[in-house]
Amino acid sequence: MRRLMLALLTGAYLCLALVVSLALWRMGAAPAVGLAAFIGAMGLCFAIHGVIANVLQGAALRVDIETIREAHGILLEQVEKVDARISGLLETVADDAQRRSAELTSEVHQLEDLVVRMSQRLEHQLSYQVEVARAEPRGRSPQSNALIEVVQDALAENRVDLYLQPVVSLPQRRTVFYESFSRLRDDTGRIMMPAEYLAVAEPEGLTAAIDNLLLFRCVQIVRRLAKQDRKVGIFCNISLASLSDEAFFAQFLEFLQVNKDLHGALIFELGQAAFNDRGPVEARHMARLASLGFRFSLDKVTDLDLDFQDLARADVKFLKVGAQMMLDQLEEQDGKLVIASLPDLNAEDFAGLTRRYGIEVIAEKVEHERQVVDVLELDIGYAQGHLFGEPRAIRDSIIAEADPPQDFMRGALRRGMGR
Image (cartoon, rainbow, N blue to C red):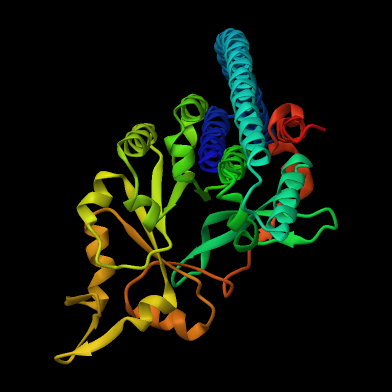
């Protein structure tokens, strides 16, 4: 466009110069004079054009400078506003951080106080249990006495390990839960399985002490996992002795109220026989835990003819059934596969029936791939067993963080044994 305008102006200047030179020639001027007039007219036109162009360019430049000044002013105004907002935001963040720090400090102090109070209660309970155990040694064989000494020493020296075994979703086999187990070690480091030490620990009243320590550690491990933003739950066994102990449960409930944000990650587990034997005190305490959002699981299931309405009322959300035990109960009747104890229900509808009551079935003790195929055909969504991972001990450093304060296990048991 600019080139076209320049061509048109040049043509106009040329025409004007020709008109001037022709006019002089018509007036009788010599040709040389006409040519000089032509050249002079052309030069004059270009000179006038240059002056006008400079004037216009200067005006445009002044307009651009003024526009830039206005934009700069607007930019400075916005920068000042942003700076004011950032200053206000920093002040707000500082105030909020200070407030949150004060709240966190208060919660930590409250939690420490609860932990100390609970540990004192557990210490008293352990002292009483050991005193009773040592005051009534009659009727026990020398082997039982020796084993009880081993169990007491393991508790006194805090040789109680926490083991976790994965619970996976099917068919993805992704770990979604862990089940916790306790293992005792004797003074040589040999691991004692529950079947070995529970036989003497239960009659002597030491099972509650082991359960209490396991519960405490499970809560602490769940808190550690929550800090790492790991969306994994832990099944933690709880005995009827713990649920029926009014004094201990009051302390433990207060402890869980402070940690009720962990309700989705901590599932309390009872055996089927213990659940059926629960009394009004245990049922009331289970309801108190459920009111905080904590869920329950039923394991050691031997009878699949369950009262699902009763389980739902007790907030039981998981049902652990031995994989082989369930498969052994399958039989064919009238061309359909049923469970022997539930002949009116198709076997593949059992898991769907429990889901209608908000209960998920977990096939446990899965050892072989063939069992996985059979379990999937029964529409069971979760599984547990050595096929997916054996129970593994939590590292000593983590266990140390999850230990109750003041070594109450060791001190209580030593005082109880007169050491």
